[in-house]
Image (tube, rainbow, N blue to C red; front, side, top):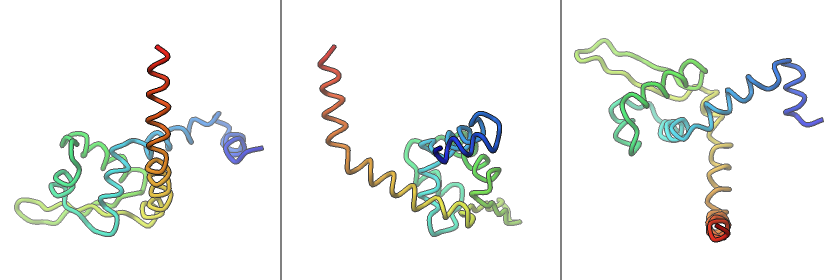
Length: 124
């Protein structure tokens, strides 16, 4: 029995919880936010500038979900205007090694994947 099958049996929910967590973690914005927060506490506006293409709304939703799941902590400083900073929690930092491994795998296999896509496209 695989670990996944074992987890599904223990939870008794047919894997819904695991799929929901993986859907959140594997979201492209989540991985970019986590990678950007690796090592430093970062202000919201700096995060938005460091992640090309992310809208303010999507960054807000992603950070809320990460905070809800315990991967990111949020600190509001009582200043005018308020300064809000985000950083990875210990659990969030534990996501860095598997995320880097996945990114490394993707980079290693880009040529093969592109060749497969091209061959598939030619099959018409």
